[in-house]
Length: 112
Image 1 (cartoon, helix red, strand yellow):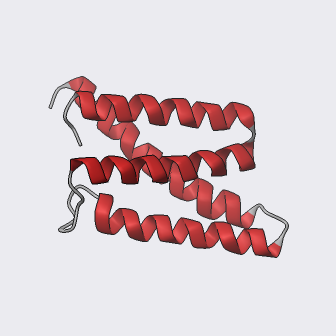
Image 2 (spheres, rainbow, N blue to C red; image 1 turned 30 degrees about the horizontal axis):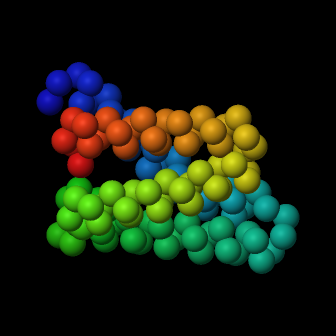
């Protein structure tokens, strides 16, 4: 694995962690409304379970290339909504930009 591939994979790992933290901790615990708090925590837990089952590279049930790409788009879209809602436009757009560039590089370098 060359240095660019290692960097892209590391960014991917950090995006996954940031998505979960953003959804569960940020969306759930920072919200003042009990229903919204519960909703974001549930969404975060569902994302964790679905990703662990169908998106994790070492999973026995990993989706094929197109299915995994669709799953990634859904997960990062939910993460983007969470980051935009929680942290505002500048952090939300930064997350979206990093996620898009990382997805492009993951598939361009055949790291999926």
